[in-house]
Length: 208
Length: 243
Image 1 (cartoon, rainbow over the protein chains, first blue to last red):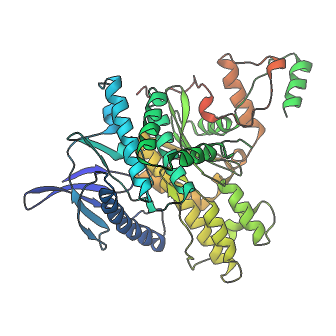
Image 2 (image 1 turned 90 degrees about the vertical axis):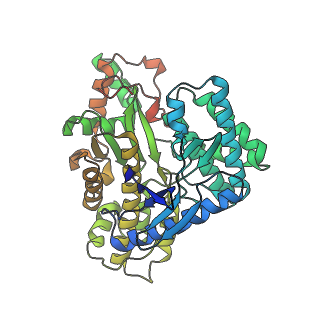
């Protein structure tokens, strides 16, 4: 049963020996030439599976990967039952404390990823699922392994940008909670945060 | 330009109106294509961004982290020994290319980066045919644009896509963005070629919109704001969803 047609992949719900699983299938993109498209999809499937596994080892909840299939460029992984953090925030049912608490936890988890040299590549509140008191990170398809401050800075910058455009009403307080958590789990946090500001200042916001 | 505007305002005794450049590119497309609330891909020598209206502003969903696409193409054309403007010449050569040369494809979230493609492509000049390189540069760079456009479209669920800015004249890019739009059931629009690059008409039209919404400037308070972000401008003329 198809449950989501995303820009990046289609998600199907399936069962393996009675267990609920997600089949994430990357469909060919018709706008791209075949050589480029085949390559990208294969590369992302492999990378996503590796990153999901490494993130879990780093102490960040992620769905367990059961199988990857390079022919159909798909991954079979745990189904996580919960709401995306984005939906949860937009419902506006969270108290201020709950919101800040969740976002601080998000910051801690990002810190753990970065500490282990894992770049998520698409940090948004839609790629986080709140389930059973834990926050699961999903969608590592654009991620990479890197300890480069620039790469980590961009990763953090994406989170900031995503929150600015999707949660502008709670952005100020929300994002400082993220940074607070980030500093708690990652010793080099301040260096990366400084880089993030630099990336923003770099001139790409200029009009010429 | 600012001085000219001030002088005209004084000489003709008409109000002075400040115009955001990015906004003007979007508004001229909305006007000529008759679309109310599109997702806009704005690609030029100075800007590369995906934006859409939400709650009184054009929000920027994705943009380049370093080089603008037009700037990157111009720089690459110069490295190939082509004359300015390089974009059309690259497009011409690309149609004669057939061998795909692998180049770094860098999409981060809804943002993208062109510095790596540029460096890699320049490094391959001499060892690959110029036609093949132009073909590959276009395929990689425009696929990245199509991908972020698709991501932003899925995110915002707009029902139309507008391509604007000088690079929007490129037919291969138009084709790709059209495919993205159609796949998501959205209509595809591109500004007329003569209004794609920087032009006076777009500034004038954006000025009219600003004027109608009652925003004029005092001469003494007028200055050039090179860092004026698109999402800082209040937009009162779009009938968008109110989610």
